[in-house]
Length: 149
Image (cartoon, rainbow, N blue to C red; front, side, top):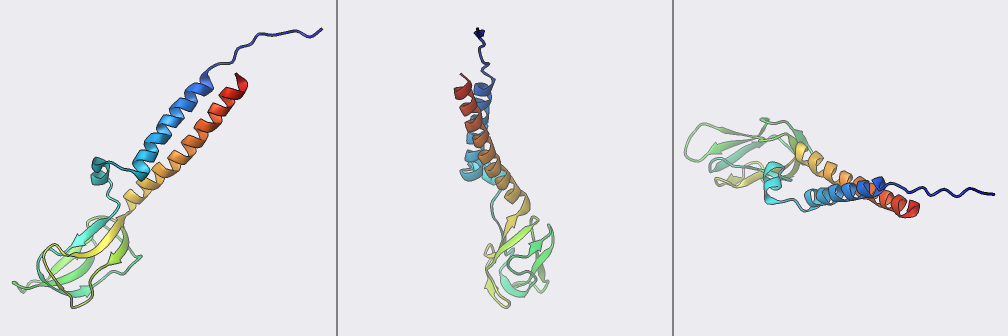
């Protein structure tokens, strides 16, 4: 004769499903739909702008090149002074776009190039991969909870 056991399962898998789902939704929000404060702390693109009006005498970068923070990216001959201005990269990153050529006239604030910061790229990649894995884990935990109950 078989014995009948009345064993009740725990709700641990349900709790983990809820926690992982909440974390996954937060990562979806930060990875694909960041708030203004997140965009300020982790900008997806950083422009390098001209500090003064003048003539670009030399471009030292190209598209898809990695630049270090403080690396000289272009030389500018200002219109009002004789002292050349060296434009430097504000952050470490990869060059997405170079929008000027040698001997181009620029005004103050005109974009010279656009960088993708390396820390921002890893921030958004981390959030996107964390969202995928945590939502997958939440689905697995919810499935186990429903199956065992």
